[in-house]
Every structure is written in structure tokens, then in C-alpha cells.
View 1: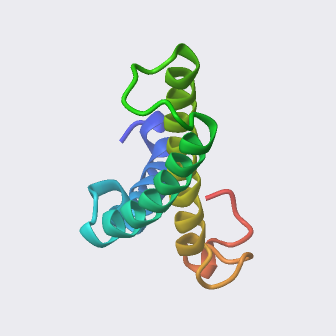
View 2: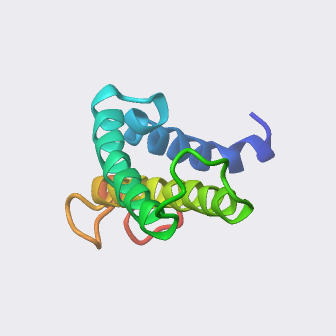
Length: 113
């Protein structure tokens, strides 16, 4: 094994262990998808109610430019909420034993790797 490979060995191992630790999120676990979709459905209902309040009385008329812009903003907001939800779930998983704990063995504490 070359010197360069030796330097990368432990970071690669830790990265692989990290991927294994959050595998369910990376592979699209059904239970996680259901929970996220339930949250997303609530956010969509909220924004749809807000849209109806803002654009009341338009009925089936073609969407105005402002309404189309609103829809784009809402899609971005919901995507951001989904990212935040996933990050929060990952943080809970990562710190399940406390904020000062990590998924690594305690022998690794205090060292770079």
C-alpha cells in the first residue's frame, strides 16, 4: 500500500461507516418516505389554503403571473422544509446518545480519525 493510500484509509473507512449509519435515508426507506410525505402533505395544505386566501375569487381563470410566481415560491419553500426535516431526522439519529456523542467507538474520541 502506498503512503497516499495509507493517508486515505481511515477517512475512507469512517465515510463508509457514516454511510452505513444513515443508510435508510440514502436508500429511500419506505417508513421514512411515509413520514416525510405526511409532513409534506400538511405543508402543501397550508400553502394551498394561503393561496386561496391571496387569490380568492379567481375560480378556474387562467393563473396570473403573480399566482404562477407564488406557486414557484411555494414549491421552493416546501423543498426547503423537506431538506430541513431530513436534516433534523439525521441529526437525531446521529446524536441519539447525546449531543456530545458520535456513532464512532469511544476509542476514536479526541483524535482526528
